[in-house]
Image (cartoon, rainbow, N blue to C red; front, side):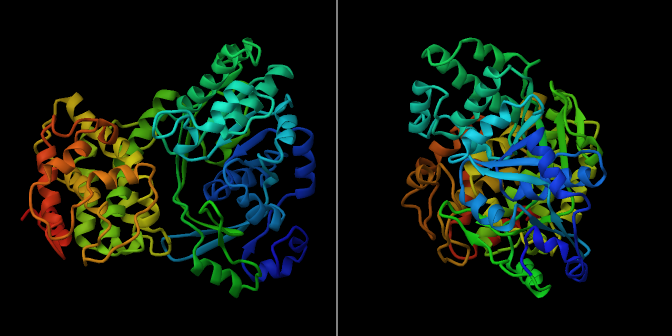
Length: 534
């Protein structure tokens, strides 16, 4: 059986396969969405299909909404071709529970899926609709960048700023173009909701749109009042949000399970832009989405699907709790040491007593003392669930290699913010040992040689070549302080939000690094000695 709209009529097959069918009239949903769209989402990856799309399905099945989601992809159009169009915009969601059971369902809430490079005109029509309430985003933190590592504008964006909103080429230029279309057709209100895993994500999205609109106004390629529209919160809001759901790449074991149920064409693929796609998505059961409640044109009833709507201040506290203390720092700790110690599954790392002590130290001992309780979620309860339920889940095929991607962009938030909090609260840095150990482990990871002395592939990172050039020449078995090599990195507040030497941690990290580079087995020995206080 193939996953298509027509195949949904064979209810006996899906029932036998224990895959839940959508409980709403999909044809009516598609027609209603075309007539009066409410929600457009940018970023057609796994997190979208496993979370926002699944939430909208829940609302459709409860009769709380009649329209679905229009999803658009602006970075990797092959995702649309290979994961949406080929399967009539249907997805099989496989929820992998910690007790070993699985829950399988067909997500059918996507009314249409589009490539921004070829269907921008259709998206313009949607953005011109007064009914549109929100545009949401899961495009990764890098997706909001206007400039490259050299500080200059990306070439396609630079062209867009000169040419104006008519035919933009860049991702962000096209988003601004759609807002401009909405402005010219009536200046209708809308919420622009970033759901990406970065601090103050709404402000980051606003800054990008504001910069583009300001450049267009200055260059005389659009009405200057468009800039006022972007800046008017009663017209265009940019809510902050915090999202949390682990959604790994499509796993072969999940594919095999679906094939054993009688499904065809379940084989995943990798796009030319290195995106892992499949007609299914595997994800954990736990999920959180907290959004600042500022929607000038109304919003879908997402509170009925588990979304917590609250104030900006509360979102900020929840986001800091998760990203700086209770999950993300633990993930990064497991990522760098997992790669060094040869692990390919996070759940397997959670059987390693040293690594468990490491993340307990990062979270409970060094993180919780400076975390702010957001009120709506207790930090201790959150981290308990992470360490005891979510990370050890043996049925979640998440890999340290995936989490190690873009670590240089993550470190200033995941560890730097905690270090800043120590300074602001007057706490002593001298007692910190777990966070310095992770930072030293990351530097050791950048050598690209595991603890057995074997080379491994470093995960993609926009600063990877720069970092590698700075530590070039350091090899396994070298001795020394390595200060000249490490000082430019450890003193760079862009990486750690602070100068690590100024707070007395630079030399400590140098020492830990030197111990871990001493030879084969040195990473394990240093880890063991450090977490067991020997």
